[in-house]
Length: 508
Image (cartoon, rainbow, N blue to C red; front, side):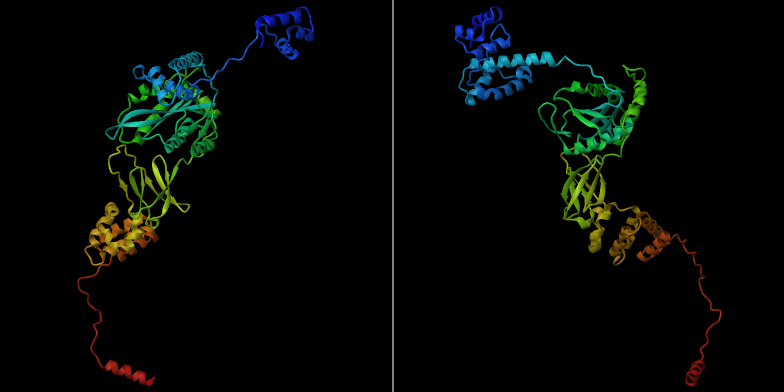
C-alpha cells in the first residue's frame, strides 16, 4: 500500500522526468510490479479495498433484514422499535451492542429509501404494444345478486394491450378449472390468441417465485399455454404497474358494470349479460391513443391474432374411491356412480361447471357441479337412479324406499303405484326400469304412458308397445265384438260319426 504523496512522486518521476522503472524502484524501495500497476491504472489517488471487519451481528443479519422488511409493511402503531428487535436478537443468542444493531437498521433504511426513489413507486416507463402482441389478465372480487342472494364473485379480466378490448367472466372460485374455462371463452370472444400473456404471480399459474423472472410454473397452466401457443410472462412481485391496463380495467369495470348490474336468477345469466355489455362498451369507449373507438381498433387487430384453436380440455383430475353406496365425495357434496364401480378407484375430472367420472379409459358418467359458499351444512347428494339399476335387479325390495328412486319420472311413478299393488309387482317394475339400459329412455316412457292409458299396465304389454314404437308399426285397430256370439252352424250330438271314423281307420 502506498499513500497519495508517494504515488504523486512516482507519477512525476515516470511521466515528467522520464525515469526508468528500475530507477524509481531503487529510489522508493518498491517492487517494479507495484510501480507498473499504479502507472497502468492512470489514477492520481490510490484506491483501497473497503475494510470488512467481522461483527457479532453477521450471523443474525438475514434475520434482522427480514424483521425490518416485515415491520416496514405494518402501520406505524404496530411496528416494533429497533430496541425491541435488539432484545429479540439477544433472546436468539446475539451478544453484541445495541449501537451495532441501530447502525445496521439505519443503513437498511437508507438503502430502501434509495431503491424506492430510483426504481420504486412514482417512477414508471410508458408502455406501447403492437397489434396482436399481448393481452393482460387479472382477477378481482365483486358482488352481484343471484337468485335473490347477494353473492361474492371472482371475476376474470382479459384485456388486449393494443386495442384495449376487454372481456369479463364471473366464477364462484379462483381455481384452475375456472381459469382454463375463462381463457377458452375469452379467446373465443376476442377473436383469437395474442403472442404473449401478462400475468401476476397467482397461485393457479405459479408454484414458486424464484429470483428475477424465474418461475416454477404449474404443470396444468403450462399445458394450457402450450395448447394456445402463446408465451406467458409474469410480473415482478407487488408490481401491478407492469400490467397497468388490466389493473385499470378492474377499477373501471366497477363503475361501468358492477354498480349498475341488475339481479339475475343464475350465474350463467349474469355471464351472458357481462359478455353482451363488454362488446357494447367497445363501441362506446374511445381508444384514446388511436383514432376511433375500441371496437374500431379491435377490428384491425383481430387480423393479427392467431385463430382460435379447439377449446382447451381444462379439467383438474383427482383420484377417488367409490363408496359402497355408489357415491364419490367432492367439496362436501356427493355424486352417484354406476353400481359396477362401487368400492373401486375412479378418476374425477373437475371442470368449471360439471364433473366427469372416468374409469378404465372410458367416461362413466357426468354431473352438474354444485358449489356451495356455506361451509357449515352437510352438503348435497346428487343421485342418478339409472346408476342403481344393477343393484336393484338383485334387491328389488329397495325400490320402495331407495333414495335414488324418489326422483323417477312421473310415468314411472304412476306405473310403480299400479304394479306394487300386485304380487311380484316390485320385480316386474324393476324389469321395466331395466329397459332403459337397452333402449332410449324417452321411448320406454312413451310405452309406459300408452300402457297406462290402455288400462293394461304390465311388463308384457309395455314390451309389446315398445317394440311397435321402435319398429315404427302402427297400433293394431281395435277389435269390436258383440256382447253375445252366435254360431252360424250349431254342432249336433251324433255318435254315429264316431263309428264312421273307426270304420275308415280299419279299412285303411
